[in-house]
Length: 487
Ligand SMILES: Cc1cc2nc3c(=O)[nH]c(=O)nc-3n(C[C@H](O)[C@H](O)[C@H](O)COP(=O)(O)OP(=O)(O)OC[C@H]3O[C@@H](n4cnc5c(N)ncnc54)[C@H](O)[C@@H]3O)c2cc1C
Image (cartoon, rainbow, N blue to C red; front, side, top):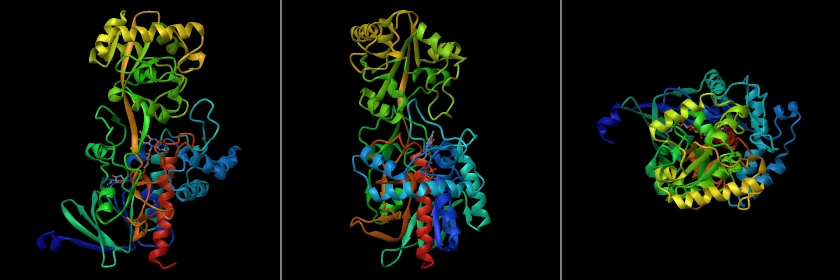
């Protein structure tokens, strides 16, 4: 930094600096302030948000809301399920700390005026009801608003339009503060604890390519483009270790056009083929979006063509969607895609949909060999007529032959919500160095961290990404406050 820039820098002091105003950062700031620490929070946008603003439901186990609704979710069982699902490749103490805290955190949020009166299953047959929601479409903004009000009431200094650039360290390697930038001016905050809560790096194709070589730009990221892994880079620059880099929360396929077409393309009654015209999965996998993402991830260019005929289309219009939209509010299943015909024609004109009486024409549009696509459809139609999918054992309720023209093909892309690998932490949310020792005074939580989710997001424990954001933020805030206040 040039001497001239140093002289222009503004200096402030805080006990704890939080970087990022998503669910993790806001929870961290409130938790640290609640314990008596003086907190400054830096957020590069104009207010709290991040991907947290999209959250529909948040994880909780043994919460007051579940007790009210008579839902039994013993933390021990969920912990074991989470560890088994991850094949014990994650840090069990982190998962334990998170799940153990999560019920109390739902009560902590309810004490701030939120009422979690809706804890629905995510998919048919889903019995573990952990996805806490409200009557609002998205619960994320509701929680952010409540935490902001509480933060202001407790005197947390909120610095918006302020980007953290560097974490400052002292002689013994511990953190001493943060260097930030606001409207082209430097802001130096001196503090004894720093909490990184900057979210994932889904907005950085460079980091995605670096950490996940199988990443393709044809994939669609549903989160915010300004989340570029800045906290991760700042932490590694001062010696933080990493864990789970390259892990994405994959989430089925997505048609980047109109919503009714996207809804139909994810229906279990459609037939999915890859770019070569080959079927690759039981289409009811649509109800397990992250595992469905894994199946698509293996396909050429990570593309899916959802195929159906006039009969399947008409049936969905008559009965409504069985699944509903991606990340949709529970209850979108059953929605009648009323604009489907108009949307299909419009999307065909835009080039993302093909409508034809001839599968050979559709194969040509896809770039697949016509005989391969024809063989796939003939085989699938035979399965439908026999009522048994000899390849993937798809539920026979959804085995509907494609025999009534016109035929439709919708080109869809693998999508993901966020990244969940990053800064290595322990169960106290302390950031670890290459020797697995805490970097004094440095904490992190939420999507910028790794080691708490395996290579596939465990959708059975629904809502764990936002749940981890709030709970890891709370734990980090409490521990950071205890450190600076010597408690
Ligand atoms: C469409 C969609 C739907 C989702 N639905 C759900 C759901 O229903 N349930 C669920 O559990 N999860 C859901 N998720 C995932 C969830 O949104 C995230 O896992 C969670 O919100 C992450 O919270 P966070 O606080 O770690 O990060 P974020 O909420 O992304 O917040 C990070 C913040 O840090 C700020 N920041 C970044 N760099 C800097 C910097 N250098 N200086 C200052 N500030 C900075 C950003 O501006 C941002 O505000 C969904 C995600 C998407 C995209």
